[in-house]
Length: 57
Ligand SMILES: [Zn+2]
Image 1: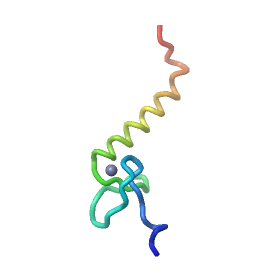
Image 2 (image 1 turned 135 degrees about the vertical axis):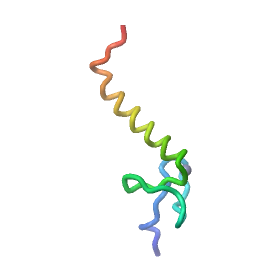
Image 3 (image 1 turned 90 degrees about the vertical axis):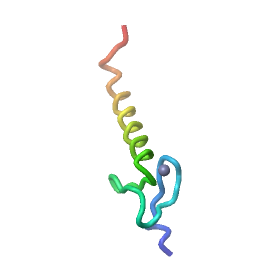
């Protein structure tokens, strides 16, 4: 059983396919589209952390 080794795309939930996809930060992404989504989500979260010092109006 290799189920523990198998990775899953955190964005679309697709299971890792050998020989395809992208591995970034130990996570597997089925395509660049999902990788970009993951990156933008991480960026958004970081941005929220800075909301304390960027008051609106
Ligand atoms: Zn995906």
